[in-house]
Length: 310
Image 1 (cartoon, rainbow, N blue to C red):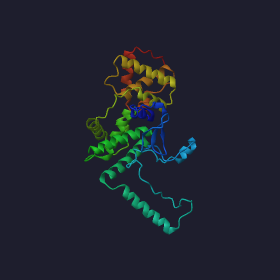
Image 2 (image 1 turned 90 degrees about the vertical axis):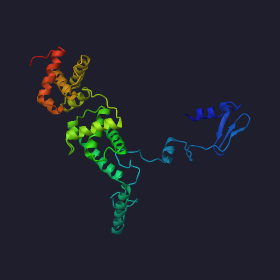
Image 3 (image 1 turned 30 degrees about the vertical axis):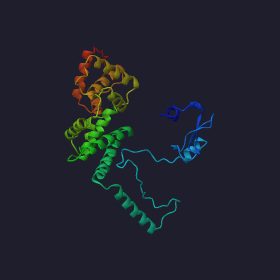
Image 4 (image 1 turned 135 degrees about the vertical axis):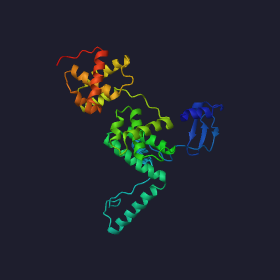
């Protein structure tokens, strides 16, 4: 609710017109400019105690910290003593001061991580950052995965399970929610846990946390596969149109979206004379050549697609 609407609802019973009521910040009073009546006194000003007349002055006087970072175990609220051996003026510290600063850093790190939950989150966030960087995931996906993992910790779902498995499952769930094309096999290969364990943890997160995950769309894989193969935009557009037609006739139900996208890209590349082999596409998509070949035959037969002669 805005300040004007709050004032209107607060002084609706006053005989003074609403547009004639002003606030005296020095006295903390609401005054009617027509009659001079003090309508309310000792009002609390919710704004800052300073004044600014330009945007630059307002930004300079504002006292706010950095935004919360979900991928840090304490969300970035605590301070961090750096390893630099210089003071605030840029002067090099003498050896005695340097050792003293190292002791401060050691105790500050110990103070940040006190409980078992803090230790768990610190290890999990490091693992999440590592896997996210290897998969080239955007920050929004890593933040979403961190939120899912925190909910799992609060519910006690991590106890008795591998931290790596739960982190990988949270990343996969975040990728599905944000429509980032990453398969379970891709995520599992960067962890010590196998695919079966990560899939088990993923199903657990969906069941216990009520995480809503949309159905995987094969079109989400087209852009990624096409960019890795350095295909033109026309090829990727044609592949997306083929998948739309396949979805209309019900060909995509129960099929691996990555395999369908790979087959559509293979057909689109042939139609646009930008040929790639089934082996190349299968390797990039993370599926077998047999899958690409079977989906290719289904698409051209059911959709009556004409393939140019080689």
